[in-house]
Length: 116
Image (cartoon, rainbow, N blue to C red; front, top):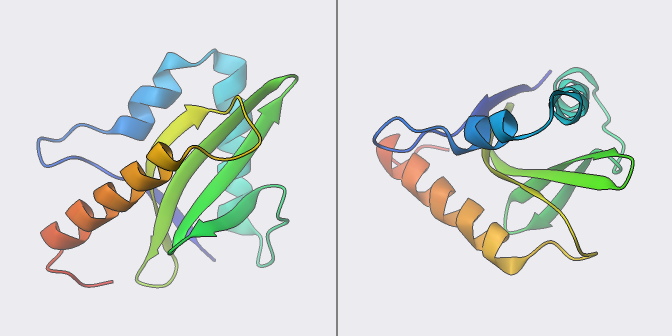
């Protein structure tokens, strides 16, 4: 079983929570459902969870024409740390979002003493 948690900046901000709070409630519920699938299923369908690049994964959610993505990484094997969220407008995940996830992973690990 996996656990999902949200990355916090050094000053205590939580970018994923801020993103979720900016959405319509129905959209946030759909994303919460996708997160619960990642936490509860042993084998996660790729329609909900996919490896992107260099240890960065995305949780996927969709409601109607709205497509949502949360990026993150594994920490200590079964903990998924979500770093950023965005509404997707194109087929490919924007490189700047992947880069942001990598930067936040680096920051997180540096504050954890580098332990994965």
